[in-house]
Amino acid sequence: MQKLSISEIQRNLHKLDEYEIIEIIDKKKNVVKGFYIQAKYADLVNEIEKKIVQIKKNRAAGMLKKYANPTLKEKEEGAWQEYVMNKYRKVD
Image (tube, rainbow, N blue to C red; front, side, top):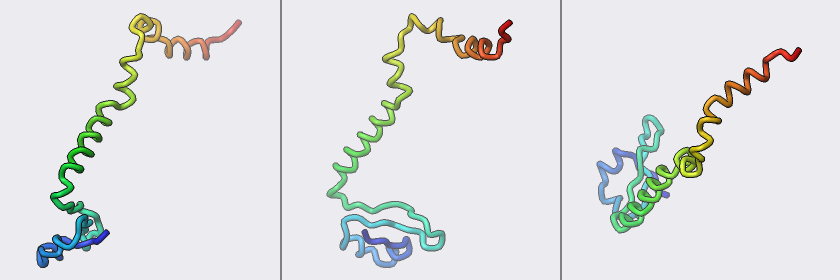
């Protein structure tokens, strides 16, 4: 993948025509600022973005809610407190 600095792109804009994907870097800070991707890949990028958004919506915490049993909620609410108390309670 070709790497170009911001100043190179400003001075030689025609270089963007030579490549399909370019990594844009800040040479002073040695940091990747982003990527240039030709417009012909716009549909592909939009499709990937939609998949990423969908994955973020379906994170594990959100997925567990649909499997939760509401009838057990009252039993589970204080379960950790009861466990700790039983663990450290003196047995006579």
